[in-house]
Length: 335
Ligand code: AHM
Ligand code: MG
Image (cartoon, rainbow, N blue to C red; front, side, top):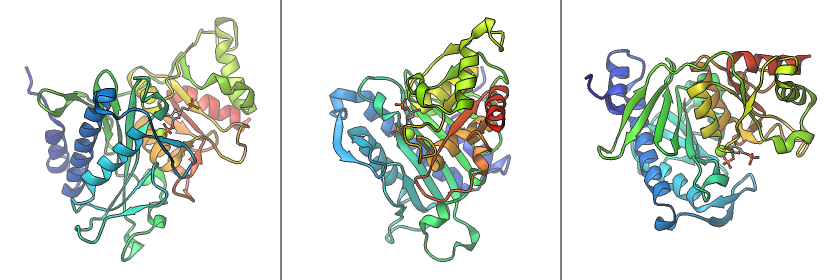
């Protein structure tokens, strides 16, 4: 039997054998994984740990925060601020950027995260997760660090991933040479490599969208879903299945596992907002993972990773998953 490969060993090999990541990035990713482990423990305790329910506060986007949103945010900050690898962090749960305090050594990386994605599923014991993206501080940024340094296109990410807290806790990662998955071995306390070279089938018969928003959709999205719903008798000539977990991490995890297409498009409920999901710490890391697994990710018009961000908490319309379906929906927008 071949020996188990831990996340640590995988990252060390990425550094020494492949020369793909510098040592600082390896250590940074180890710390993020350690923080996810700790969030996983908190999630698992649930009511026994007093972590469920509302925190009775709001984040910058006006969403009510759950206790676990805040706990997960604090765990990530406390784990990452002193290691010397980071210049600053940004989170869905914080208005502005968090600059590493002067008392700690300063690094050259920027870490962005949605500490607990799928907040509406926390209290109902459905899969949730942490999404993260790593950027490098731009070379011309000079002294200090500002919000502007975070406004980089997704194509400039140096690492991205998520950790899903479901029946298993699984860390999914890319450093730009494919997608790998690690399952948390609770007895050993370590993440163990369980899936290598993850590939998404190009075609699918499964779509994920919040159907309750149908009456608000734009015509191209309506057309695509109508055609899926028409099934074997319709223009697609096949029956489709639908899944909507309302945790992007869980929907993306299913797509990485067996294919599918995920849509959270712009809709008429809030016409001034491009969509619900956030570009920098949701769409970019997920878009890169999907592309690295052979899928595609667009906002209906362009590749998500090519969007030049203008704001830290910028929202975006998201269509991602099996390549041929994403190209079809994107094509309908062009028509
Ligand atoms: P969150 O980061 O506040 O949890 O919001 C993001 C989540 C996604 O995980 C999910 O795809 C979507 O919101 C679900 O939205 P809806 O409740 O409209 O179906
Ligand atoms: Mg989220």
